[in-house]
Image (cartoon, rainbow, N blue to C red):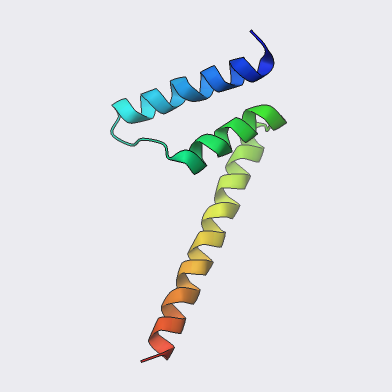
Length: 72
């Protein structure tokens, strides 16, 4: 099995476990985990990536709320 196949298999197994737990992965989640494996992210790098992404999403959400309130 090639590295690419191994990465894909690991990602599919993780997705299956998430689905069993009632928290299925979406396409973006799958792509992120495949990137982590492909790029060889350490656990610390993975956590930092997820934290930064969450902060970015929170800022974007806050900006949407502020602009919606300003339009009133």
